[in-house]
Image (cartoon, rainbow, N blue to C red; front, side, top):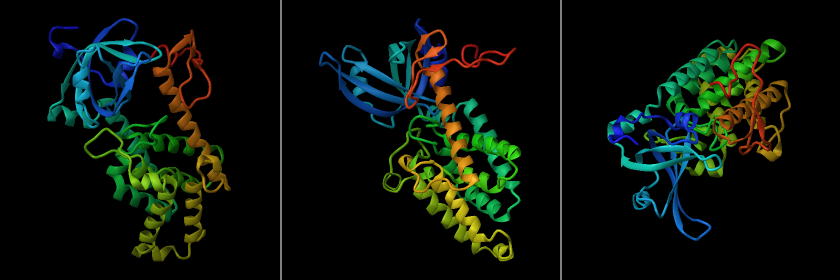
Length: 356
């Protein structure tokens, strides 16, 4: 490790996972403590297990009783902002291991920089949010266009902070915007292949399908940790989404422009009910939390587009973090039920896993 810690390159957790190997490499990373626990080894000795996050990814740091940082780690609380400088090794089964580590608390300027996100994340969210607003603004149905734009106007900042899940896929600050934007791109292409679909309804359903996660899976304005909240726990994001859309719809129908929509076909009430159906059925099965099964073409497409994007994100994370069991074969990562295999590169292109 360099004598001057500030000479060490500062990487995000996502970058650390990409570059760490079997040989120690010195880097710094800035993160917030997302959770702490005291556990015991098989020999009955205590160790601290801390979950760290920086908005790009998370890692688990285990500090054993023989470490010089054992006492310092015991003082860290959830929400603390830290710099961890170390010789990083990828241990395989247990992931990143910071060796010869040095710990310090971040200053206010460093905290604000971390909250602002890394350049890659900021650029991605700007592009993704532009996709969402652009698609909504182009809707032909004035009611669906208006309710979508009303949602974006009223809840933009909360939407940009929300995750698409607590675990497994897009489980990070801004992850819901990524998820919705990619689903919109996919759904728009499907509508080109199947023009019988109601494009505006399907795309509005994509925007609203997880809107309850603005409360169930949201981040504090000044934090990278995802707190639990009573509404998310007791009501759940599907019911919260139904409630939000009904509230927005009532506001919409009270607006002066709504008078001109009374004679539109399909009727306002039918549009509302079909949009609610997309939200209520998007998990696809009762056992996965849907109160109703998909009963329209748009509902079926929404369910599968949601599943496709979630699964592909799980695979991306797995290729980034999973242990390679043999050439081209990677150990399964929850909730995927199987080991995964390196994808086949298109002829004349680089492999997206090994050559990135």
